[in-house]
Amino acid sequence: MSRKQTCTVVWIASAMTALLMTLSMATFADTFQVGPLNPEFQAWLETKGAADTNYGYIPSPVDWSHLRTSGGKGASIYASRFDWRDTDSLTPVKFQDDCGACWAFAACGVLEAWSLIHEEQTWDFSENHMKNTHGFVFGPCAGGNNDIATAYLARWTGPVSEADDPYNPDVHTSPPNVPPQKRLWSAPVFVDLENGEGDAHDPIKGAIMTYGPVSSAITWVESAFNPATSTYYYSGSSLENHAITIVGWDNTKVVPGAPFPGAWICKNSWGESFGESGYFYISYYDTKACKKATGFYSLTDPYSTEYVYQYDPLGLTVSTGGGSNTAYAANVFQARADETLVAVGTYARVDNTIYEIIIYNSGLVGSGFANPVATVSGTLQNAGYHMIPLPGGVPVTEGNTFTVRVKYTTPGWQHPIPLEAPIAGYAAPTAATGQSFISGNGNYFEDIQGYYAGGNVCIKAFAGYIAPPVPTVRIVGSPHAEIGTRVVLSSTVTNMTGTVTYVWFKDGTALPGAIAPEYIIPELEESHAGSYVLEATDESKGIYTSPPFVLEVLTEGALPVSGALQVAALALLAAGAVTLRRRVRPVTQDR
Image (cartoon, rainbow, N blue to C red; front, side, top):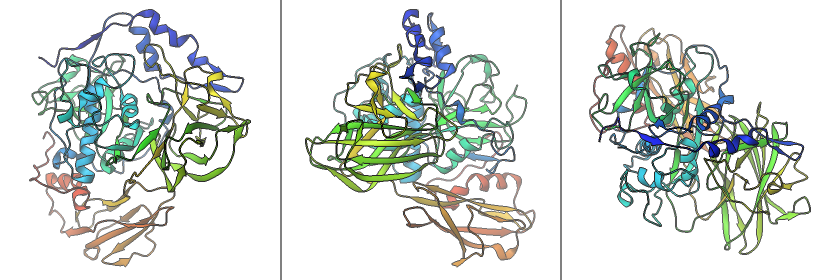
């Protein structure tokens, strides 16, 4: 079956307009108001009255456009080229066939790559299970997006093994009770900066280099693809309709038709006969592609004693607030057994969201909650979904009620509370009174059902033994550099909380004054050769040490042009981020 075969989805106009009646202007009492919907989603609703071509991507109603800040308006801090294909860290290209499941392939590609890069584990996760059990109102082959994938993973439905539910575009029911193979801890959202300067792509580049590939959306138009060069450039305004996995970038890649060089390196789901063995290059200057991306990171192994308390299986669909960047929300649960709460899951609607979590040994008492037993606070660096550990755990007693209350502070954003709410033609969650509560001041809480029927707050509580992801520290830079050149050694830290402090060492001795996330050598000398190590400490006061980074100083002109590009692209290998298990192909501009 040809990749050109598409999914044709017909939506009834009356179903399309139901959401638009009140949601974007809906109010909670006189203070709370639902935040703006994604304009792409609204346009998608309006255009689905007739048949439309879609390769499997549906715009999410969640608007992340406020993350597009102006940035530094300077040069990028990252290498000119980086490509995870140059290591053995990507799983084979797959084929979605005649089914709008590209979003599931893109998400599973991210999960599989993260497992290889960070755990050296080879997984083939089931796109079939993700498309069949996503839980939203449209069919398995009608499409999806990164927020749907996040909901599926955050509620612990998946990921499951391909062997347990093999891909079949014509099978729309998955086997029951298929066990998930991993637990998701983090699904951060990254957005390009709006300045258009050299650093405009740094948020997404940083995610790719630090964590691994990301899932993103494009507008696929056949005429915009150049098969001779495996390049893509679209300059129109049609809605996004396809999802891909970004695995790297090349600032020097020439894309015919684009105004300037530079392209994302993307893994597709149309088989290895497409493009460059299943990969292609999308211009930075494409008007629709790769402006926002999601990672699915920090996976841990499941345990039989684990349990998730939740009312939001469909995850974030809208958010609300009361005209301030601070608001409070709470979910009340009844303990199913004597067990220990070990983590809380929720969404950050902006980067650097400040949270305060309080666990109460009670339900609603009057207009508030009583008997606080634990408090945890911190800052979430990236917007998106996050699991937050509860140090030491919080015991709960079978049959008793307990409450998880979260104070959200979202700088510059006045809709801090994440909600799962009904949206006609998209999501149909259910809810009951006595589950979710909201407050503008943290003192007077009201049941959300009095304001928005069917809605719940996106707060989960996790019980049982859940091993949190292990913090890691790595040094990123070129391990070989010519004398007289400027060298920048950058830090990448994962799974660390709060303020991180740094100390750089060379050959076992602390470098005077070297306490920044980067160590810069303005002009390289022979004496700079040696073994560098970075120590990082977070609010837990644990000290985490990077693998040694060996810097070799070469004579001027020792590096050929292609070799210089190659060592920059493979900097993570020298830093111990991945283990090279096959010979690296020479890096050339056209690959």
